[in-house]
Length: 196
Picture 1 (cartoon, rainbow, N blue to C red):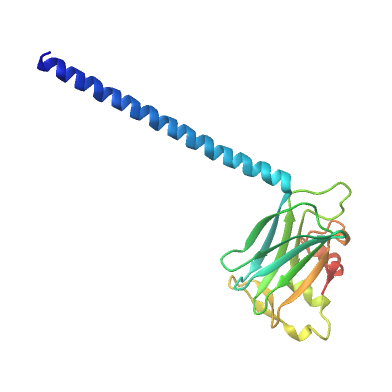
Picture 2: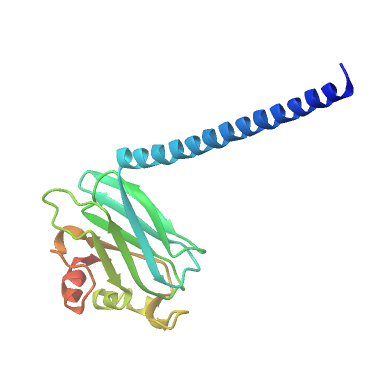
């Protein structure tokens, strides 16, 4: 075998290595894409099996954690919170609640809190999204807690309310009768549905 034959063999081996490397790279890429797609599909299926997506949103300053608790006549459904670094939180709920309890931290100026869901049950009278404006809470204050509330401006210059001590209020969703908080006419209906 002369030197020319040796060069031919080496060249053929080099080409073969490139083909093998390319094939392995392609396989790994396809495998990873398939794995990623599988994880995404599994997560979506998991969400659908466990419950429906819900959202808790705070408009205003979030220097401390705001809490939300969904419940029905059968008991507590799920709890979630919005803490510093975020203004909203998504979570799963197995069933729709008949009441929502909001925990408002002290010394935080907020303009509203919102609970939303992407699903409603047959015969359920409440809206899929409800916004409670902080200013509306003043109509429900008693002599005992009135001194704990004060008007304020959020960092975005929106009108809001701040409390000197942490407090909670409950919203009766079944009493809302379609009120969502999107218009001023919802004021009375929502106020009547709020309990401290």
